[in-house]
Amino acid sequence: MADFVERPRSACPLAGALAAISALPDVAPVIHSAIGCGGALGGSASTGGGNLGSGYCSGAYAPASSITENEVIFGGAERLEEQIGTTLELIDARLYIVTTGCVTEMIGDDVHGVVGKFSGEGKPVIAVNTPSFKGDSYAGYEILLDGIFNHYLQPAAEHDPGLVNLFGLVPAYDPFFRGDLAEIARLLKGLGLRVNTFFTPDQNFDNILAAPKAGLNIVFSGVYAQNFARNFQERHGTPGWSTALPIGAEAATRFLLELAGHIEVPKKTLNALIEQENQEYYGYFARGSDLFGDSDMKHYAVTATNSNYLIPVASFLQRELGWVVLHSFVTDQLKDPEKRQLEESYGAAGLDSELIFETGAAGIAKTMAGRLPENRGQRYFDDYSPLFILGSALERPTAIKRGARQLSISYPMPNRLVMDRGYAGYRGGLHLFEDLINSILATS
Image (tube, rainbow, N blue to C red; front, side):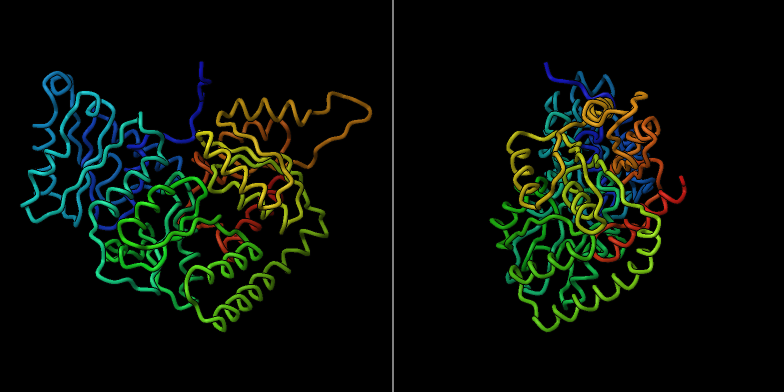
């Protein structure tokens, strides 16, 4: 029998799709599911995603069919048609997306047939199937992307070699998605490129429409949006590049150099940008290093994050701070091929820590207790101290029990407010260094 997860770190595909829609400009959802789904899922994404709040017509305010027993027995297609019509009348958007829940999928409502009735209304309506039995919130993100970019959008007549699309970071379930995307966009713009991030406040619906023209898709994940990127290339002809999110100067420099192998950028501009960014980064870092070095703030570390942050965070701690990363827990529920791919990438990154696949907070605590034993009063004891745990808010009780320091950087993290904070790139590396040191100072 499969193990249960006592405190999950994501929700269903419907939740992932709704979180992404809430971050897209001029896009409105129509939830076709049981009453209460939209509000509950929107609330968990908003709170767990660093209290990111709700967007236009999202969360408890999202249009929904809210079916009851009557529709379960007699079918919910008529109720959905009514709700779509009302939404088109009252809600101003440039794209309406019907998302489905478990109940409406199980009773067999012809959602796409209902959506087809509105093709002549002059307002685009599409549908995506997002029941829980299709995976988790990360799967919902990819299902949504596929519906918009590979089904709704038509191929472009020609490509713009200087335009880049960014994918892979999942709104809410990657709590720093906005700040991370903004920092990557800043670096790419420094090379003279134009960037579609889609999910940051500076974007509008025209960025979505322009996506098929892009000369390159960058996917900041070794696991998620892989099939989507392949389908995008097949439909639109845009090649994809999957890479780890760069955190810190070393990773960001490597990212920019590797980028030059996937899209044409002037070598002089590239070198100038790298020199400028490194000078600025280490100019700030050097000031903080006085405190870091003089106070001997090196730590043992354990990370418990999703696969998107796994390699970036462990690499930053080991390579740039010189911390000893003992264990890296992957909290996603992954399939075996995805685990093997992640293990290969982890090994290729040259990381020394042990990679462990564990989703439950209790499982992580139990594994740590077995592999990092606590002092029981022994006279001689090889103690892993000081210890720092980077994970979600679920790791906080474990950290308190062990006397370790803790920083929430992964979903769920209701104990932090994330606005434009991000850990990607040069500036993000400084942010992470700053947050780690502040956490140490606050508990010293």
